[in-house]
Length: 253
Image 1: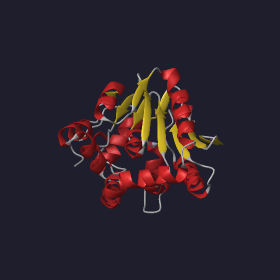
Image 2: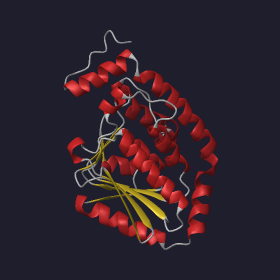
Image 3: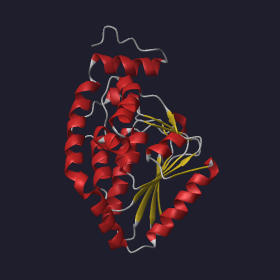
């Protein structure tokens, strides 16, 4: 299973497990994640959700081969996942080891608590791929770090380290790699012991002001993202990535 789902002590763990592709998210993985979020919404036993990857990598982002083969439309499980992230009523946590690329970073903007390894690396390479931001990151990131920092991260798509992510407010705590998942799991289990209704109410109050604007921006991003996926620049960027060469955008606009 490329997404391992486990419920214990009130914590629903969503473990990404596709090591041969560095946990790149395929459409089938998105479908599994969507089913897990629906389970969390439906079952009272689920108090907290915890997303994690492997000891060496959180996720390398979307599976570009999947995107090339199956263009995204309004019914795509990718968009379903993004909406579930934004509207999740229960506490959502993440434990990050290794690289968190693209969606691996933008999904963290929706998490209530994030714990990362001291060797974790984050990146938002959408422009590099001839695309635009997704998951509401064009709305959430500048509100977290300010316009200038958000522009630098999104325009250049350069990786940044865990210490910078901590300073930005993207993560709550940085730990040695071997301690990240155990620490996050312990925090999740402690949170699961809190009054469930109080947790949901507190989360709703924390996010109430942003919800409408965030969902509207996510829809706007998704429409642009779908259009740009078929653009010459995006096709060149993704082909170059798969062919392990430098893209040439000189005649792709």
